[in-house]
Length: 75
Image 1 (cartoon, rainbow, N blue to C red):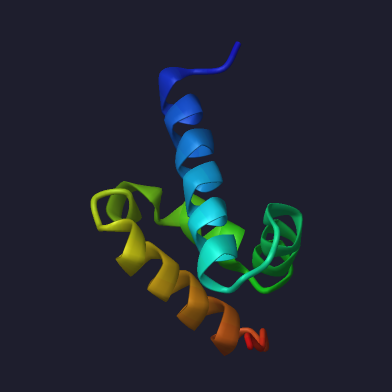
Image 2 (image 1 turned 90 degrees about the vertical axis):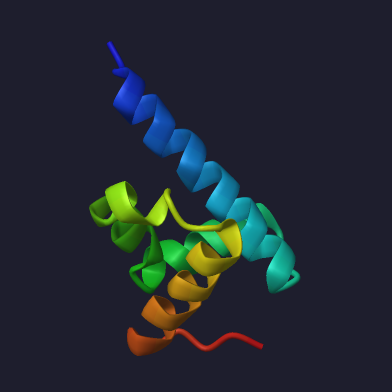
C-alpha cells in the first residue's frame, strides 16, 4: 500500500516534471528522461522536504542547475 507521503511525493514530481517540460518546451516524457538522466529526479526525491516548500519556479530553477552540474545541456 502506498502511503500519504509517497502519494504527495509522486504528485509533486509530476507537477515539477510538467512545469520543467513547459519551461523548456518539451513533452513530459522528454522532460522526465532528461531529469532522470541528469539527476533531477533523484534531487527532488532526496530534497522533497525542502523543495516542496518553495515555489514551482524555484524548484524548476533548482532542477536546471542540478542537471547542468551533471552535464545536462538545455536549449
